[in-house]
Length: 147
Image (cartoon, rainbow, N blue to C red; front, side, top):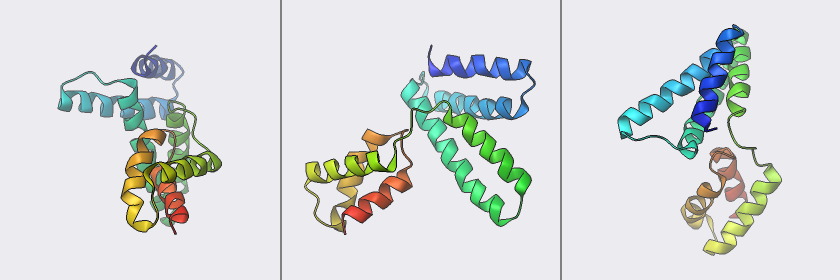
């Protein structure tokens, strides 16, 4: 079953169970998928859908910080639930130790020596971790190793 089909069947289940939060989260993802398909005039692969979901999780995390600053606990709670729902559709996330190991390997592969080589390392490592790790965390770890 493709990720797109899974989203559709989960949406139906959420509607039957009257689970508004899950229904809204899935509907939002499906709308983003549909928009991208229309824009690019092609059927998206599971890999493309994972990128869309990752982007939405990142946006929600950014919003979470703003909601916390604004003391909007209702929105904080709602956004955290939505993030958890969206994470169910992403591949298993890498741990910091696993990311550290990948960063070390990639630095050796591209023969990076200083912060000047940051772009080389990031462009080599991001395809390896796409959808499985937050880009800002990877960036911090790469910076730490290139000092």
